[in-house]
Length: 415
Image (cartoon, rainbow, N blue to C red):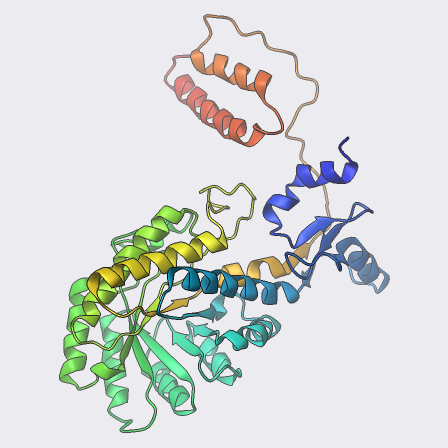
């Protein structure tokens, strides 16, 4: 017999999208667990809200559970370490948290508190973020990767960061940024210098809502010709020894693992070719995009992902290893910028329900379908008669497709 709690879990799909962090207790209230496997303790969201109300604090309120950031850091690290051991990958895995995802100090500090033990670092995409990142205490072996718009003042700050002991990587995304790097480098003879990375504009595209941010029409990144020009200029200036990283980014919330594998294969090939040109690259930054399954459907729809963290790690590690072995080049250290994956679960926005919109009419007069009705109408009627709890998501998408077809037929005057 199905209990009320089981019905609630199924109705709201909590076990599908909650990733083990969310559940329902015996009171029927939403609870948050500190890890995906440890359910011995839990925070009752209803009790938290009731306590806030007694203090005179009303919704909307944002509840943060920093333990979930730490849990996601551990989960990501475990997945990649398992893949590295299984495939005998000769490189390492590191992560840099993109501060633009959430610059809240408590969020960044919690990430570093757990990530420091794995040499996880930070990514800054603006001057303000760079100032903030330089003030944060990181593992001495972690990276500070710099993306985004870079003027001469930004580059100067990056060089000062390297002088202070940070492992800074300036990622060149436009050719004019190389001019600033070479100019500032001329003022720093000797001492610790930042590393330089190249962002390649891949032919491969991502998937989902941000698909257009990748591919040949991408706003940021260097073409093959521009990469060759950058390498030549750095060789001429005697600065090619600074060139350590290759970076790409094909979009956020990548929903389809096949697109990810295609991009990894292409990027690894570019990395290998650059290494074979006697360029001392050793880091491959695969960018962000690791998706969060918001709706729990485990599909390639915009708000989901058709892969797990372990499958993602397996495909990234194996694909890069396979290409590098084929090209006879050393395995690079894999760098990730998975900010959404690390921080999305930790915060809950609680609001008051002001009203509701009725989208379903309860008393619907049954419609009899005739044999001479359009085929799309007959198929819709069949969906109505055969829909169940187990197939409702598939049938819902089929019904949406049939609805669009009905509008098309109506506009053409065929029905």
